[in-house]
Length: 407
Image 1 (tube, helix red, strand yellow):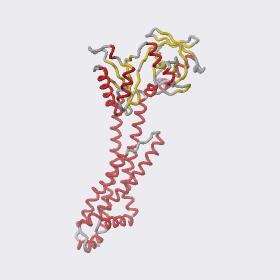
Image 2 (cartoon, helix red, strand yellow):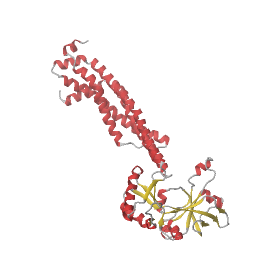
Image 3 (tube, one colour):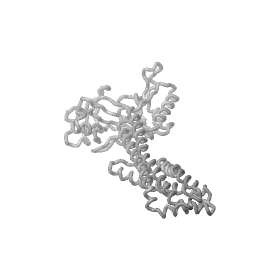
Image 4 (cartoon, helix red, strand yellow):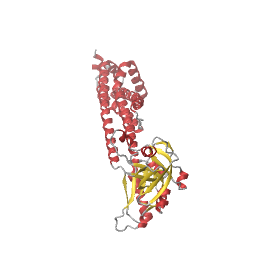
């Protein structure tokens, strides 16, 4: 028999026993769909968690100068030109910006003042990517306001309420006392954002809330009289590749400034550890789901043995008219592989659909990995091959005379 005849014969055999074939494939279908669905939900959950961590500093790195180094000189301070140089010469960076924070006192035009735990961040358009906030009133600082050094400010909503009560703060003037600079300056409020720790405050875990405000970096540079920075913040496009990108940034800085006193640190160092734990947990979940594939394989072997027993006389007739052992072996092996492949195909489709149904109810966007789908196809084939060998071998070794005598 040639391969086409063996294939046709295998298809006819499966069709003639539709219910048995479907029940045999059920183990494979459940196993493959479980692997696909659990992998997609696990990857989606991992992305959602690490995405939330990113808002708290995961995947964001701070570059600083080691001022305690013996070779330190003020000329090695991080400068605006360094940032522009890195943007041009290092790939894989989503955002890079100076980070300048000052302790302040803030008061409104009626004299109401906030002194305790008040800080101002000097921001740029890239800073808004690095440290995203949700604006609930007004707007962020505009690019033209950064460029023209406009004295505007945005407040967190708790601070805005302390200063202006239930009245809108947009367009109001606030006076900022820069404690470290001994400078007092008036700013116009253009936006109000949700306080980053508001949720913790609402459940009583953060009763004392710091005051957060933001002004253009260009304003701070003018007030300080310098474009040198102690810290530069970098956000790589791919958080998993962050350390490699930062190593490249450090090399570029060292080459440009002829010094090796630059260093970097992840803002949330535990974030990488948590991501590693999530990846390990995802692998474990996939492994547990894969156990059902083994059970499905046992089912394929069991049914194929039953099929061999039922078709002993057919095997005897085929051998009597010239079929060789290999012909019988390949026919039963082909049937087993077809059972697994068809079951695997249905399982992939069901797993894809199931992942989106589960994701909808638990608010997770599933990520179906092409690698997992490809592996599922390979595994389906291997299950048919491995668990179909023994029954096929048993069938091929039957003695034709004994097979014909079988009742």
